[in-house]
Image 1: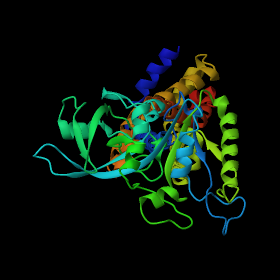
Image 2: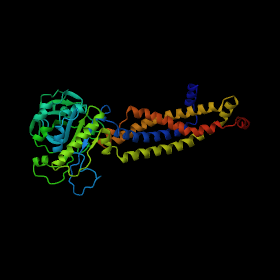
Image 3: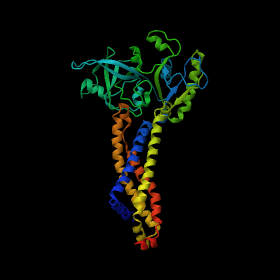
Image 4: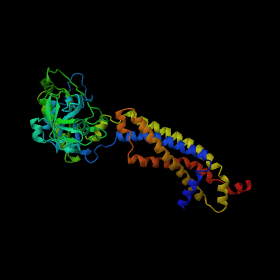
Length: 437
């Protein structure tokens, strides 16, 4: 019976084609607007590493000066000082640990047809690659020995590798960075988690491009690489690079990988004990609570999916509701002209439930047509949004979840809009319709 009603619904699209086209277009525009904004919000607030996000933790220790501070005030910064990052690296807590800061330096190519150019990357420890599941096209990361020695090794991203060496495997080649020759040990294959959770502060942002290279943390320190990005200082800072390292300036992101989410309490206890030990040395004068954030909490803390995005989604759903109101009016007009047909069916023995099911399936067919058109409009809208900026291009993309949601939303919206017109159609009195004929 459903198949029969579905075929009737397809035939009904040819009745009053102008009215049908208006209904389909009204639903399509409403669905496209809501799905486009919802897709962007979905990507922005999605879990970038779902299989381990609950056991990756970023610590927050407030090392700011006590002047003007009141309990409950936000911390000086969401990053760590070099002193704290070094101590946390040496702690051996968790399965893995990494400290990260941005490095932007010129590269002098070996190729004579390329002029020197600037490149942006990060300094990190060896655990970075396995902690964040970075995929390799060639080679691999470095090891603990290179970390300790501050070895001059480098991992390139695919784009920088192709720019410098073409399509060849560059492992073993040298890259002149910071006037030093770094040996290539690996090439990353399109490593760009969305959002870019591991270094949101001070870099290209949560939706920026890929890091072009990764060098050892201690190597960057040994070559006195100044951090690129956010740098927050409190108190007096001595001149020179060593003054930066000895200061309370914060500029380093830090992550722990624990064996399980349940190890969070153990890490929190250790972090509290560490802060207490530093207070005895005259640091951590604010005595602020120490915090741990897993991946999703970290993105919420930094408001990656801001209130503007949520407001845009709410406004788009408000527009969809307005489209539904218009669709209800159009369906009332479409179904009202079929009162004689309903009267004849009722006189021949059709129950009101049969009429209700038939008309409801017809509205679902309208919703399916609206969903197909809405999907095309949504793709077009996302393509236009993606052209606005590089950051929006990262999030303005449809995935399979949004594809399914588009059709479900369109059919549900059409059936919701068709409830009143369908109920009105079922109220037709057969005797009055037959007499009027």
